[in-house]
Picture 1 (cartoon, one colour):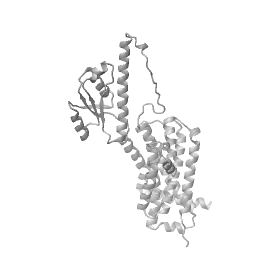
Picture 2 (cartoon, helix red, strand yellow):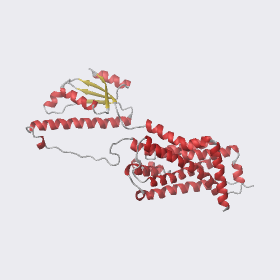
Picture 3 (cartoon, helix red, strand yellow):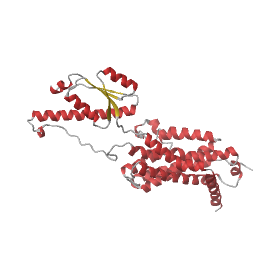
Picture 4 (spheres, helix red, strand yellow):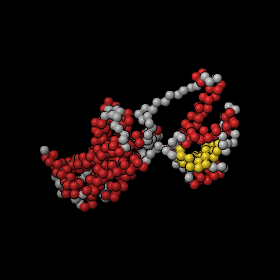
Length: 380
């Protein structure tokens, strides 16, 4: 009973600090949502209206049809028509266009003979990710043009009976994200990343501020055990960050229109355990450093360097090498990332992620225990 009173005393003190210093409330509740909104609208892998330059040296019906496949796709926007390839080279160098298409003379004549015709496509590779996606679009457009040509040849060769023309049809079905919109996998990841950074930061700054002002001496000499102090610190900051989680979830569904297809209860339970774990990590960092600047730098390095790049946000953890996968296990981010995307996109629930919830709980317990062990009392 005495332990509960001491824990409640620490909680009341921390709540007064939070209400008195609104910056902490802003960092815990508003900043994660602002991080999601700014990054959600600023980062996108969908390519629309990519600047396109064309040098049509054939000037035939077939060459114009080929160019139309690019301009009507929605992925490319024709901004330049040149008479010489050198003009396209200069435009690529200057960044006015990202893709250049050069159709040589005799393009239509070669196609009419039934022979393969060559077309030169130049791609600006300075932005690697966009270049890879644009290359995929170009391949799809060329494949569609070739298929139309084969159908036309088969139609002529079979006296108008196109149905007898032998061809292989591939039926693709995209699961979980059929529209292939990047927001559907970026936004759930941003929910995880937003909680990843700000949750441990606010609690680590709180403890180190007590160290800088000397207020920590009152705790170190008071009749309170380390686990009571850690519990009193952890609970209010975890609760405030949990309020921030609801804002993140609201922004995901309302602003970005990414629906939660699976169990919202499993997502919420996972988020709460994840928040407790990251709050425990922030407490552990604050026990090991002395100043707020050191706490901020240590949190940024540990959380962003490990949690961001080895979280599976942009690349699956399974594609990393052995050392990368080992680093991903230092934080619970990769596990919660899998759970969040599974609930958002795949419509999964407790049966699929009960093991993940247990693992997240183990992370939270270990971080909290290490924070308790790192706290040092002073003798009177």
